[in-house]
Amino acid sequence: MSKLVRCNKCGCECYWDTNRNGKRYLAQRNEQEYEGGTGTWKSPHYCQATDEEAAAYQAMLEGVKQQLVNIQAEQIANGEIVVGQTVKVYRGRKVAQGTVGIVFWVAEEASGYGEWKIGLKDEAGDKHFTSISNVNHYFDGADALNEARVAQAKAEAKAQRQSNKEQAMSCQDEEYAI
Image (cartoon, rainbow, N blue to C red):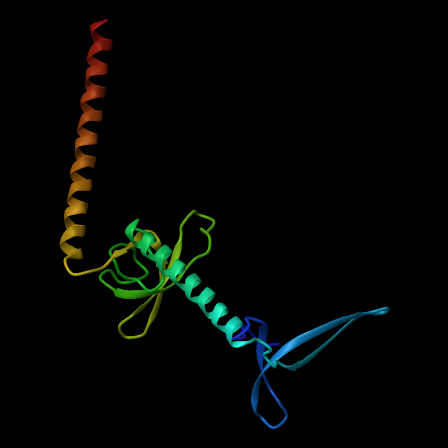
């Protein structure tokens, strides 16, 4: 049995099948319980939905699609990487740094090392897989923004190291004074 799809009018679970003449049709799986077990067979799907039911189902589908769009927009606003977003590789060794592509896959769960993986497709159509921590959102001016963030992070790290060093020196001076 092939991939399950839904009927556009009633939402019934169906799948595409081919008859002996090679014509494709929408089929549904039927099931009935008997005394000795369960019997299953396939038959063409003849939609029984009225126009009002079909309109209600289409309205429900549009509502679900709008909710997904809102969720994705919220995720992008929160800084998350989502499918369909343009990203640029800034770190790592397996994918060339500077590669710009569109995300086509985000892992369902983290790997054994706690890293989230993504797949991106570059302009040439090549697919690359890398850690989500190796990429950032890409837009006009993103390179300058990323350089500023890196410089700020380095300055903060240097200041932290300097304060740790000064604190260690003051502790040593206090030990010798006692």
